[in-house]
Image (cartoon, rainbow, N blue to C red; front, side):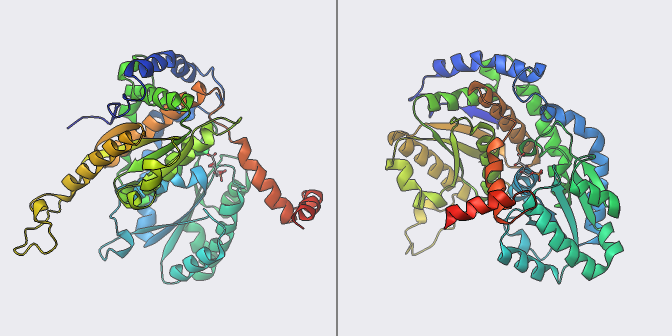
Amino acid sequence: MEKNIAIDLKSFAGFISYEEVMALAKQSVRHLDALNSGTGAGNDFLGWLSLPEDIQKQLDKIEKRAEHIRSVSDTTVVIGIGGSYLGARAVIEALAHSFAPLLRSKKHEVLFAGQNICEDYISDLTEILEDRDYSIIVISKSGTTTEPAIAFRILRDHLEKKVGKDRAAERITAVTDSSAGALRSLADLNGYESFVIPDDVGGRFSVLSPVGLLPVAVAGTDIRKLIEGARDMELITRRNRDAVNNPALLYAAARNLMLQTGRSLEILVGFTPKLRYFSEWWKQLFGESEGKEGKGIFPASAEFTTDLHSLGQYIQEGQRIIFETILLISETEKKVTIALEKDDYDQLNYLAGKRLSEVNHCAGEGTILAHNEGNVPVIRINIPVLNEYYIGQLIYFFETACAVSGYILDVNPFDQPGVEAYKKNMFALLNKPGFEEAGKKLREKLK
Ligand code: PA5
């Protein structure tokens, strides 16, 4: 078994030669240098580069708070959106039992809020929370984002009515800026335990800060192993100017060559539902970092073999603008073998004695061959096993590759100016103070 996650270009080489990938990867060493010297665009948001090291001193505090939360409550609601939500959910769902909410032996459940404004969702959630002894972790770097702020107002009120204002305050943890924003003010005013999001770490690069680590620790995951994986990947990628052995450079180069040859849609594929939210995290990472100035690859995701029975048709034969990045896991943690049946009515005896992972592996290889035949290049990423350590590696790998890829595209990978457009319109339509005139104009347009 490989020791680290690794990029494999054998199902890609038929479309773009290894030499071309290597040439762009070598040219991109300068982007890695720009990251390390802080001379590239967005250089005030590079704190994530050294998070695996810098976070060490906070791990005790995070673990202690997580232990406390687990000891006083059976459920935690994590409130946040975007970068203040997806990383935690990605790690928790990748490592949790597939039916965690239904596990009778489960000690602590993590639920999410503030990632939408759906009235039914929050109403259903408060209904569930009636019977739960719950805590809240509210996460917002700016401390002013509308969706989590609304969810926090509703759930804070619910919790205060349920257990009283003082006990509610003990059960609320805020993760936010050190001094700015409404959430910081609320935390200081009410004496909530709080954690700081470093100024130089942007939302989608913050999963290895308290933003991701506190909820992940509350879910019962070993955050030290996660950080150890990220740390080892930092050694492999961050200052490694040897392009052949730097998977972040190879991946950034390969996907940009795809774009340069007209393939503007990348699908991240996993062969397990456990990676569903990891793909959501990845989509935000690449989508918000690259999609600007009319540039970027559109990041999509699929879950195979499930989606081979839906999107599979399009991928095989639709518009040829697609390439895939497929996450392949070598070893599963659990074993299920297909039994031999005397009568073989379902005609599956040819599979008797095989493990499901073997069948899944053949489905994977068969899919890659078919998609290659259908003119879809595939970048393989091999993961030895889905555990804390390798998820930590994957996170740091994708973050570094994303930053390099943004620099190849000549955009600032660390801002997201486009996110403001919908917010301004929403505020105007809601008559937020200061937006009244804009509101009038928008209502005219909607007539
Ligand atoms: O990556 C980002 O910066 C964004 O996705 C933010 O994380 C998201 O908008 C939430 O912002 P905040 O943490 O300020 O509530």
